[in-house]
Image (cartoon, rainbow, N blue to C red; front, top):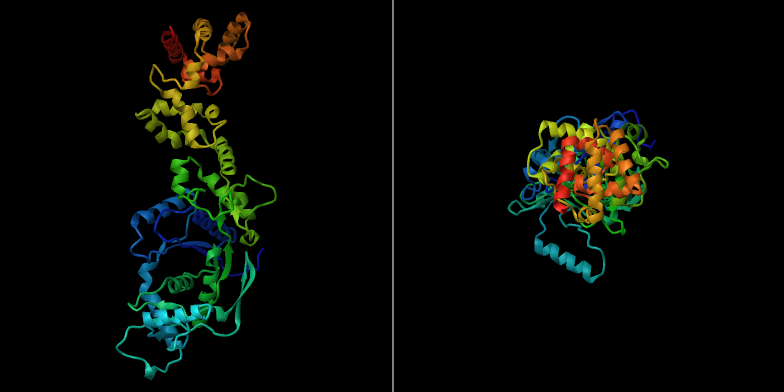
Length: 477
């Protein structure tokens, strides 16, 4: 266990900005927060940071909530909307001024630009040290706009004992006096985050390591208010397979794209994201129950993890094979209906579920499942892909005709009897079974690859199977 395991109830949070979909990296952050809270018997809270009013949308909020529900990352209580708490954030800023830990700053944009230019000319980092920082109250203007700035410590240093990064120290001279309230009185992100984390009782802040520098600024604010400091765990960001920061070309998409466009199952996404930076020995397949037993954020590695679609596909294939057949049928129903241009009937759905054990064997995604099952529901005469068409040449047609007669002669449409009859045709012709199975597959499915040919015959049934073979013979005549 990390140094965080004390008697107090662990409370974590996920705090996305609703300016778009639930990013795959955000989903991993949410998963780590959820796992840690549940592992420790604590609470996992959700805060929607909707202070950017121009970019925050209801549809983006719904996409985030939908993505979390799909991943089965349930949160405790109602979600908190940050914008609605603006008055509380401003109240804290004014209290910091009253305590002497913040001040009203009347620097103009021109004065700030001159200070920045002077720093550049002297080749030194630009750190705002306002002349208003220690001004007496009697000397403050009453008729000029101002911002409220945090009076950050100017000397010494701050060390954060981060559960992932270890001890990290920053000199206070590196930090400037950040703005808490803008000149129009609205709170900044940095203020809002700290106030919300305190008011929500957050004990552990688990987030991307791109926020590590923010932690040092936020601690000065926390100490100014005399509040307890949360325990931090800054997780390395996800990189692409080439080592570059994850972008859309690597797969930095919303979780809805993984579900809808790419056909992944939520349990595969959860398993894969969890393994991006954390592991348990050599285990690749880790169930939700195992994760809740084993996961500790303190065991997350410091190095950036690389996103690998091949590994994700292999995991997804495993979870497809393990999944309930009726569930898989339901999940690929919409894809099939779109491809077929019609709704599936109740009988179709029963057939789809019945076919799943042989359809899902080699599937890596739900796209594969839907494509593999499509032949079951196509109207005659079925279409042929290029490979299937090439399997129905002159010699193949004569074999197909003999197979048709053998199949017609079967008194019972039973897999063992069907196999026996087709094998007899192959033996009579002095050929291996594959020489007849291939044209049969083409005639029955319209594809060069499919489940086993005798599985196909049983699934399609006597009438449909014989009719499809007759269609192919008529087409080739």
